[in-house]
Image (cartoon, rainbow, N blue to C red; front, side, top):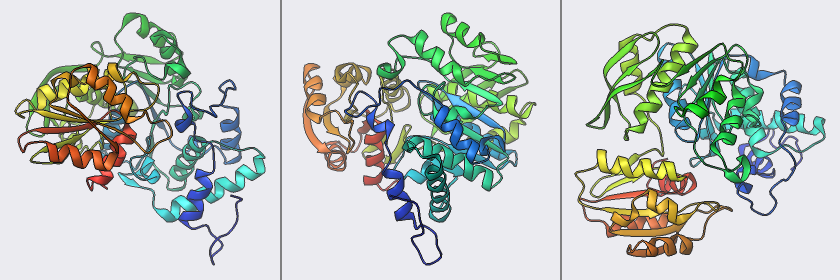
Length: 445
């Protein structure tokens, strides 16, 4: 779609803007070796040229840059909420979509509205025409976030990496603070088959003079991050961490520490012991950003207000219905532990599971402890990279689990809820794309 006026006021409407956006190559859809996957070496040259033509909007505010195999989305949301509690206007950029693409770009907890989004995309269409080369969908969305945050004059931006870091479109920004939640095997087709190689790619977001908040504790991997030109490296279990992590009504009760302070008996309204680790990293990142410890009362109020959609999000009762975007074996194992610890009182479990190509369905189901489920409903998202539901079902049958195949996610969720007893839990998981459809079906948006 060529740029140009669409309405009587000379501006695009949101439908025209979204049509233009979706006409671009979606590398998130092509990851995993799908037909059409680009084979050219990674480069930030096009993204650098784009932001230069836009006037370098990513330099109009300080940035907290967040990467990691798991937990980066939760950490980014927690950090943005804490900074907002200090009276700052905070931009937040996350991925992937959770229902509407607008949700990736938010200020002070509110997604960009249709008018502003269409206006920003229209400007990017004009710049693309000047460049004379096609951008990718993710480059456009990243530039849109940077540009809108500059337009509305945020005081800070928390930017979640799309994939890895070094060659990610977000890496044209120089983070005052660089957060690395952890490193495990994921996206091996793009990032290589070793955790060392993946760590080197994630370490690419570390810029001279920044403070690194390093959640990865493996000594060999930590050394890779320490080798980067940061001003300081704060390491988990040394400079920051969690000393107590207890199940509480509606979440966890945690004790956290940073280089500047200790925080005791803080309520974190998120499920899963791993969220305390994410919170510890977020608190440390905010302390590094602000250059001072956080007032305990401000922190308590901020954490009490944290909401992280699609991460062990409860969307129904009797039966308990939970959605979680676990999308790799480590995330699947964390989901199983959370069921055991935070929802031990439930009588049984029904799993609604779909995943993307590139995943080993047997490994994912083993991580989810699917052999302990009463029923697995195998499904697949409406997504080009979706693994056929029957392949998920075959893996479940190999574990000796009762299986039903319901390809459409909304119908699969409906079947899982209908099959569960009132005192059981239904967990919808395996891919953020499955969870996105499930949230819409359950009325979350």
